[in-house]
Length: 167
Image (cartoon, rainbow, N blue to C red):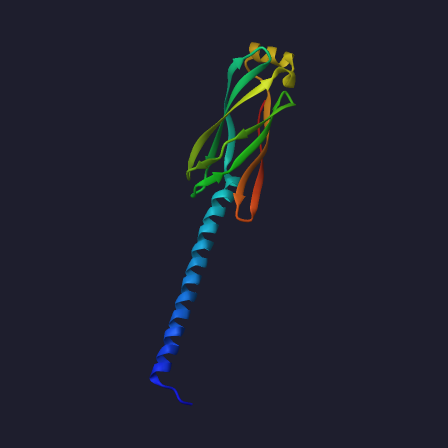
């Protein structure tokens, strides 16, 4: 076997270049994995959060509908930020399904609470005129919000059920 110093050096240079490429690939894969886990945790930890409807404002009584402001407080007991990509809930008033409410995406810092707001218009025919009279006179009604909190992940959307009620 006739090996020259030049051929040995070329071999080791090619080997070093190959090893550098492998090291870069491993570093990139590791970084993506760590980022994905953090990204996924921010969304999956939402199941530990608490949701409460803290306020309902009657903003306007119109001729054909009523406009409400819904204020929901989301409390994050976790040590990492939680991201909610979408929250869709059905509003039940006096056990009658009235309207679907969509809250905007939210990020809740660790050990903090965040208030999210949705404004909605409910046609009188969706709840009945008797209920509107009760709302005007009593100012308090029984309600329930039932729906899903959705988080987008690299493997698809993940949803968790949420129910909030006041009787």
